[in-house]
Image: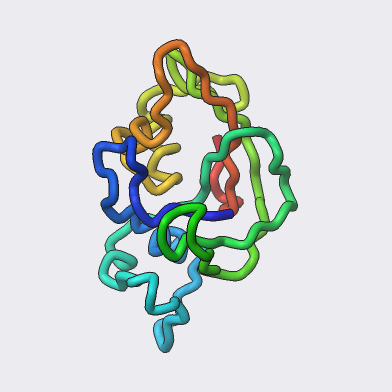
Length: 158
């Protein structure tokens, strides 16, 4: 599973760092204070690691993930789909999966519509603010996003 290190071109913050590496690393508590095994090309920001909240799940289009699946967490070394991938941690087991939909009139997890306060929690667990979250998915009027929340933290529940 490949995470983006920068906001996509359609996002108002295009090109700015997402800090998903630091947020993911914090989520799985990978950091060993005696050594940091992140490749130099990642520009790992230890200060941001200490300041950020963890990224405990990701949202992907489609319906291919199930509990017990494993993924190799990665980021692109440069331009997405045109550069090599860098592994940023050990293989991770998927602990929970929910369906996730973005509709014209709101957001639904496993078919249940979510309030704005619930959306704030979902966005935060995905490593984003609500504004960044909504811009990230860039769902146009009269379009629908259907995907999954893929979670590696068994303490999260929706």
